[in-house]
Image (cartoon, rainbow, N blue to C red; front, side, top):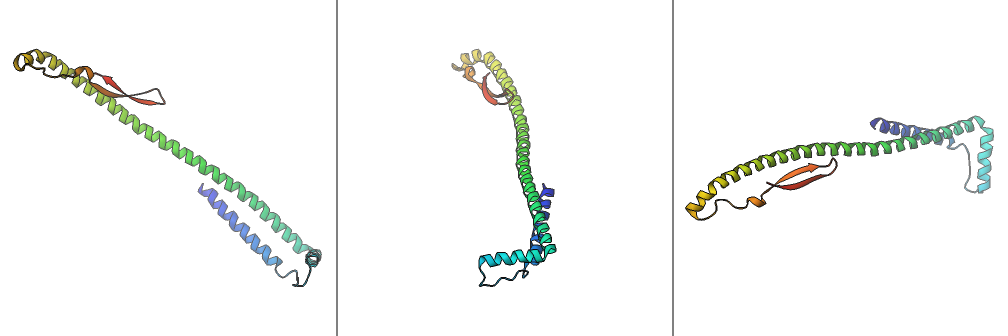
Length: 169
């Protein structure tokens, strides 16, 4: 992309140099007074072109070169615009892939923590099941309640869409 920008700058400077050269060649070559009609001015330029065919050919060559360079400049500018769009798309894709990778790490960590938490809850329930009868006898109330509604988060994916669900332990 930097190379294309450099080429565009070079084309601009070359076109500007040719325009200055053309302007220098045409200044004061045709004398037209303030009192001449538009038709007289046209005739003066035509007469000057006939009298100075080499200068006219050189001016025509400069005009053709400017036109060719402007065509090339337009092409390079269009190419640069395509590159910018493409690089933005590639940049977004790279950013997306990096974010998905980080999200995958977090999802794996959440799932691991959920599995560990579920195991701890099951161990706690086993302790509660063992202690509850004794606890009732001593304190006349349950040791722990609420095991039927305990859930842990779990992240799953169908390949494109990720879903966080609650799994009841």
